[in-house]
Image (cartoon, rainbow, N blue to C red; front, top):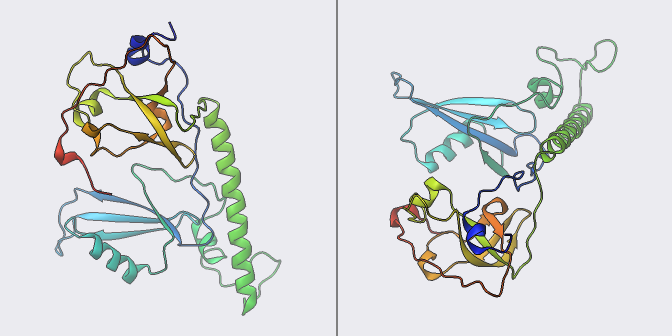
Length: 261
């Protein structure tokens, strides 16, 4: 049964998901690594604003909420960011429907400025004293290290919990695999319109491993406009058999659904 070609292409998986949790790297400093989201659909204000741009520092969890117009271009958003927030970005994460947790174990104001809100004194010692010169830098650096340690502990706990319900699967360069085609994406992306079409298409040869969880596949000319890097969860390992005769069917591709790298 495991070597049956038809079974490998149409059988539904009833195993744990094939994808271990891959947490994002912990930022090194404040406002170098941000997450963002857009909330739209608001009634227009007198100035024409109809959306809110949410920008969150991934280290301190502090956030900015900027009123914008949905018609703003990418260049205008960059100009607005430099005007309102400034700072040199290292990475941007586009979040959608994400909830932020109190994994840093302190309020964002304390994480961002090194002290509690509305207090210009050093509160980590008994009594009150002003912060001067290098002492401010030292406390700020200590806070950043403390935040990063707590984020690392929270990520490790989250990954351990999530991976208990997942399984790891690795492939070798040169192996042949099937490519998973979801019912809706199969219609939109690959043109597979039959209701009883195989859930996995192929075979495709693995050309290269990209990162920890993605692989580059050798796609046929009919799929030349499809991005050839796929997540490990979209593959099924091929169980070879000398009697197998692999026939690859062509696809009708929608030219409006592709992008140039």
